[in-house]
Length: 283
Image 1 (cartoon, rainbow, N blue to C red):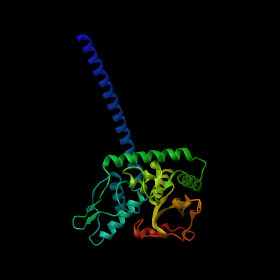
Image 2 (cartoon, one colour):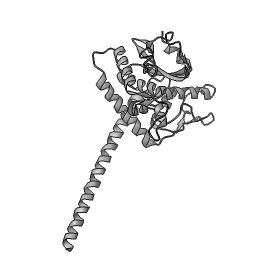
Image 3 (cartoon, rainbow, N blue to C red):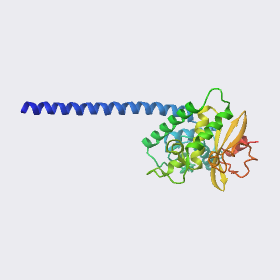
Image 4 (cartoon, helix red, strand yellow):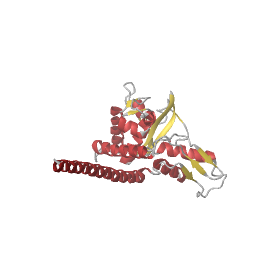
């Protein structure tokens, strides 16, 4: 009887050990995959489409979740490195970094004496990285499935606009617990398939970046605060509003437009550094 109990304990211990080994192996594999994907994210999104080095620095910080950014290394005088310039550079990084998740479009603080900028986040590091990696992989999968070698840039832009219109539901409130802010980012649009205009715009920029078509997120006013995109086709900027294209009334009426044709949208001047806004005129 005693020998049977001992043998039973051994079997239980062996099963437990096998379960622990399996869990450890799975976690290790996930960590390796996660690290590899994060390296890919850093490689493809840090400073992408930024007009200046200051915005590139903020883009790197936003992508990695850095809370304090030291600007003292910039060779600019106190008169040049003003609080307004810093806030404008941060805004560009915020709008032009599609995998940025977990913060707001306003810089928390900039101390002109120490030259330290502070960024506030409402998501922990593990959550941010998980969402960035998952969204990036999905973007790669979409491009692989939808884009073919013989397509020109305009065709690629159209196909990916159509994909987002077909898969995203416009929603001002996420029905998933604790994910309300995701409707304003690429994760909400690509993974949860629920988004407001900013989520649509980030998703479209992420896809355009993946296929190598120059693209910016633009913000302004169109009935209300609104976000859309501009893409460069054959060296000319054109307007694409995927949110408004995702409508039975407007289906694809806001694709490949000039600024004049998009006159019902008022564009603000802080989506990139103000001095470069004129470089993105669509005419």
